[in-house]
Amino acid sequence: MDEQTRSRLRDLLVAGPVLGAEVDLQYRVLAVTIEPAGAAHPVPEAADARLQVLFHPVGTIAAALVRHDRDRPDGPGGRTVMTFEPDHLPDVVAALDGPVPLGDPLPDELPDLHAMEDRLSLRGMAQVAEGHRTPLALALVADDLTLDIWATFDDVEVRAADGSVLQDW
Image (cartoon, rainbow, N blue to C red; front, side, top):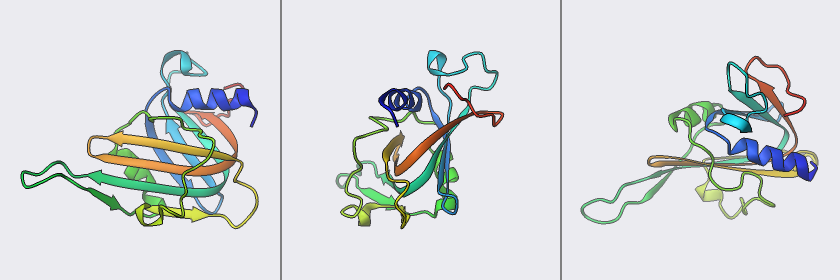
């Protein structure tokens, strides 16, 4: 991915709320539904501002869903890692109610997922060479829940709400 495309993708991913996400492990695709605001939208006149960003092929996928327990009268709160299956990712993201991603969604590298194994809600890695070129890190926070999604991918495609592929996003 060239630097211009990387910069445009970075800007697009943080330009509005994440409304949904799902992963298809068989086809190695991560789909993220976003609603970029204003000038950040590649088609500002679109009646439906939602876009689907398809990352493929995905080589690595991991997520950490953490509930932050509020401070209790008898001491400080804690953190609870909640596990879920890949097919529950849409429900997990929906429960966050459209947060805007925090931080850089396209870091130079992912955190050490092996070291984080006991703190991950889900994890998968393809045993093939492709799908590891570009790292993705979406940090979604809503009230007492934090969902971090990490993935690696090679290509990206952006689609309008009607499913048409946007060539010049």
